[in-house]
Structure formats: structure tokens, C-alpha cells
Length: 171
Image 1: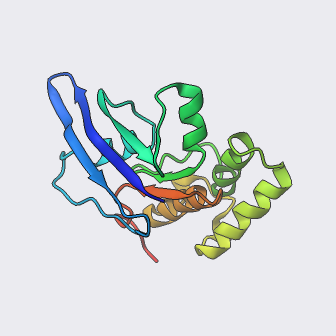
Image 2 (image 1 turned 120 degrees about the vertical axis):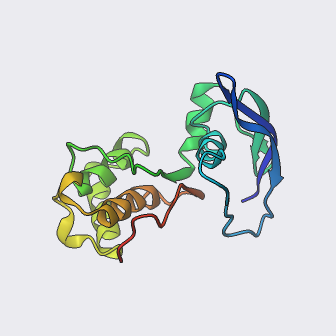
């Protein structure tokens, strides 16, 4: 999958979080890393690339197709991507298993039994099989991060966007 950005600009008031960002990955690239100082716009760039936050100017292309700005079309693009953010964004009232299975049902249209089966497979794969019934507050930071990673990987995304992916891992 080739990812391109052309002249991306994103402002928050007077602050330009992104100011003319342009880059392209190679099609065969399997890992791309963004390095920079705190407050440098890395998280904002990931959100713009993933169609979660609209750019003020510029464009993003995935495999030569421009990421649409219209919400319905952007939603179709988001379904092809997986995300893990700094705060993990797990629902606090759901168990680890439910946090993984819910988007499989609601966003990707899987039947409940298949969603739970896939969630359990990812919990096992990431060493969380014994923690599937725990809520996020009952998990360590690393366990929360692995649950968020399982949620992102379960739908088999074409592209996985990770924001500080190793900040709390405890494996």
C-alpha cells in the first residue's frame, strides 16, 4: 500500500500543527516511522492520514486514490485502516473482549459469534486470554495497549496507524 501526502496543513487557532507536509511511502514499505519532538504534529498527522481529522489544505492519497473529505466516503476509507492512539481509547464500561468485538460487529458487519471468536483469537495471540473479561481499569497499561492493538488488528486492516506504540508495552 502506497501512502502519499501533499501540502498538508492543519491549524488549531494560530498554531500550525502541520504546515505543508509532503511525503510518499514506497509501495513495498512495510513499516514507516515518524520521529519528532513532543508537540511536533505526529499525532495530528496520523489523524489526518487516517481521515479522522480533516486537513485545512492539502491532500492524502492511498494507492493513488485521494482520501475523500465527505464523511460517508471517509468512513469507507477508515474501515480499511487500524488505529492505536496514545490513550488507547478503550471503552471503560466494556471488557477487553467487548472492546475488540464491538467494532467488528458495528463497523465491519460481523455476526456476534464471529466477532467474539475473532476477539478471543487476538486476545490469545497477544497474551491476554486470561484478561478478556476485565475492563480497562482492571488492566495494566501494557495490557490496555495490547487490547487496543488487538482491536486494531482484528479486522485485518490494510494499514495500521500507531501513535507511540511501545510507550506502555509490558510483554
